Length: 218
Image (cartoon, rainbow, N blue to C red; front, side, top):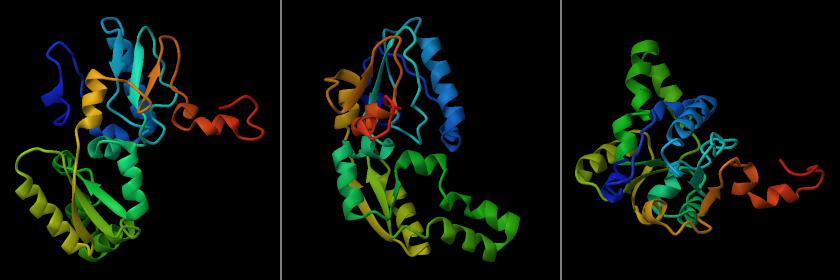
């Protein structure tokens, strides 16, 4: 919401869902559908600030409204400005753990679990758990989404990178995709679902519906 609010037109209502819902995609799906159904009585169009997000948006139904969702895998693409930029980063640095100011504040990362693990299991085991959880990462990237106090968050991310033997890098974020979410155009960077229809897997991966023996798609 820190990225959305500065661009949000004054006549557009919004709702923030609990970040912790991402832990269980089924719970996130239920919460999103409930929010869609509740808002559909007053809104003709509902924009979801989510990507595919562990399949949580698949099956969401546009009951009494039009649904708009960015054609991205997760929020990292939104913060970087496009799915193409995210894919570029993946190809260049596949072992990257991404942080933003918001994610640091929420504290939902393996690094933020360290103190709790130490208290529960002791320092030696806590170190082992964290290192196992980040074993496939070589870079820690902080995305600058244009908000203040970056010095503090930069210092925090640099400290994490040094502590856990990761290479630190700062990436310049972009609000271009967020701006398009709010004011359009909803082009091929978005999935637009008309009233009565549902978000399908093949909306995100069109070629999947052409797979052999698909028996009519997914």
